[in-house]
Length: 225
Image (cartoon, rainbow, N blue to C red; front, side, top):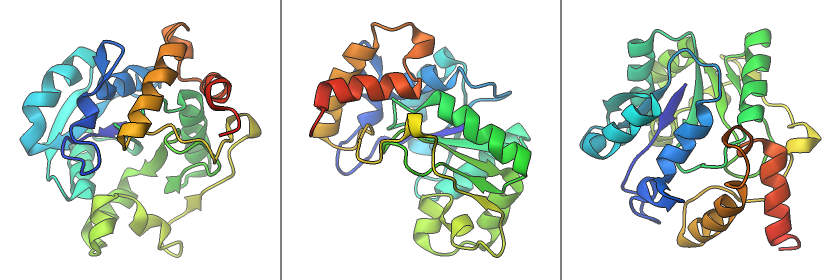
């Protein structure tokens, strides 16, 4: 698993360090992803933010791998070489309500099918992860030249279905919520996230990031919006 994080978001600066409860957002993401059965868990950050992320990564049991700020694809490939992983679950540090059960399911489907890339459609915005074969990312690093294919990691793969085996199914109904937004990218998102986390924090830790629980609380707070 590789979780990418940065500090210099143009819309909400240093958002990864904003608090949900008494811990930063990036820690909440690592806390949730810790329930996935991955042999190695890596936090991949820009080289200039190591001092901010290193203590949090250590506390959460993640290996810190610094790399280029803008070339996030290269950062992932550094993590792949360091870990020796055959597959990578790709997650981002602005999604504290990532559906851990959906992440486990798409990883299982990808492994069973031998998919180079897998990700559910129909999930709430900010709920999902991507499962990617390491060799596919290493090939993308060698061949991708368009800037957004380096910054966003996976576009080269799904823009070239003739080169890669893609698996992009509709999510099971219990996880669907394409009109729900649970990422943190703006001040408004952060306000919602604090309300959502406050309600979810009454659940045991292992249940806070189950998709149906997140959707149930989200709906109870903002039904009809």
